[in-house]
Amino acid sequence: MKNYQRFILTLTIGFAALLAEFLFKNPAIAYMIVAITGGLIPIQMLIDMIATLRSGKYGVDILAITAIVATLAVGQYWASLVVLIMLTGGDSLEDYASRQASKELQELLSHSPQLAHVIRGAEIIDCKAETVQLGELVLVKPGELVPVDGVIKEGRTTLDESSLTGESLPVEKGIGDEVMSGSLNGDQAFRFKVTKVAADSQYQLLVKLVKESAQKPANFVRLADRYAVPFTIIAYVIGGLAWFFSKDPVRFAEVLVVASPCPLILAAPIALVAGMSRSSRNGIVVKNGTTIEKLATAKSFSFDKTGTITEGALYIDQLSYTSGYTEKTFLQLVASAEQESGHVIARSIVREAKEKGVALLPVKDLEEVTGQGVVCFIEGNEVKVGKSTFVGKKDVHRLTNEVAVFVAVNGVMIGHVTMKDQVRQEAKETMQMLKAGGVESIHLLTGDKQEVADSIANQVGIDVVHADCLPQDKIAYIQEIPAPLRPTVMVGDGVNDAPALSVADIGIAMGAHGSTAASESADIVILKDDLAKVAQARDIAKRTMVVAKQSVLIGIIICCVLMVIASFGIIPTLLGAALQEVIDTVAILSALRARNDTK
Image (cartoon, rainbow, N blue to C red; front, side, top):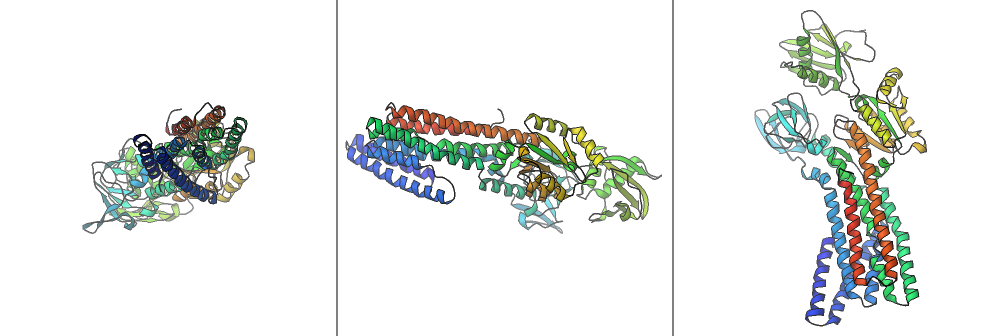
């Protein structure tokens, strides 16, 4: 039986008991009605508690069950009824609070893209999103969800990506721009080429993360459950002493009625779910509550360089070209050839061309050779863009610490583009925020040369630098971090970062343009391309744990004070039953503060 069904049943039985007592003047029938209900519901609760114990958790409903039995035994059946109503009502309130706290997370599941308009030949065929294949052309109509990830080939539009990135403002998209599944289209239709099937697309990745977050409880919650063991013993001791000294068994019942363990089992998990909800609203997907607990106390952070500390987008440093070309015509040729590629270098060249107002030329017969470059025909000429060996030259000098892209037309080298990665504008401020928040040590782990890594570290304020790292080296460094600097966090974005993310106490993936492997290996995924979100995630985690602990302590303190007062016979059982659920409500409302964006 569900919690709300128990609540409704208890209310119905209570109404019947009231009629028997006050309308038909038959207290014996009223007592019998309450006694039967007070017997059946606790039995079911006891069965549920035993199942909870078998799953490895402590069932704390024993106090409530004892209170119901004790009040019935001493003839305080109206107090039993109130305890039953408040107990079942409290469980219903818990369910409601949890639903409210995780509302933003569950909205991802309810808005999953289902339909795709696939263009096959001259026909537009409606099919399920999961049947769309790589390379197919898909039409997205105004007001529809993007079904899978891809790159726009025709049209311009604005997309609402708030459910994916936390960014509330619509984002303008045009030819060559990437689109993510789950984005809501504006008022213009567009066509895009599929780059990832539904199972690998951004939205399905988020759905997977949300499901994981609901399945993994936090250690703090289990610890709070264990707090109930001494709390239960204290309640029995106070109640037993009150009975012993007063010689009145009613005192025992009065103490147990106000001994509510619910703050222990409600406050912490609700606060953690609320914190995860708040993170989701800010473009940060946290997989489970354990991660929030660890992140709140993390002592050290390790960062990858490319795509994490740096933008990973690359910017043109220099254009070198032969006579017959101008800067604009050379850039136009290169960007046109790269416009359909999803490689980071290609995206960077196309982006800069658009920013400079350079119109892209139509291409034909484009072919992308993995790890080498692209070849296509532009205005009847064969154009190759990529590595020097790919375009037809060997032993070309590579500029140190720069990326070089070479260009050939009809087999003749006409120039090259040199590019550099830039440090993120928010990187230095992020490091300062982490240190101000109690992080004791920050590391840079990179495959770059030592002098390059040192230069980047000095710019942003990183303490320790490990250069020339292979993936296995990053793992070794993280594993060697001493206990005083743990929990430790690893932040990265690429496939090569995935192993390090998985071995760190907390792995954070920059998922906006990062690899799926990194996102799946991480405990937290940053959906917006903003490194400052790492510091924000840390702040949210700290705030969430403060609220969780405060809520638990508030409930425990109030319960202990009321138990002592009740032991002197000052609180009647009926009033105590009502006060018990007031405590629960206070703890739940306190825990829900973790959803708020203000401290």
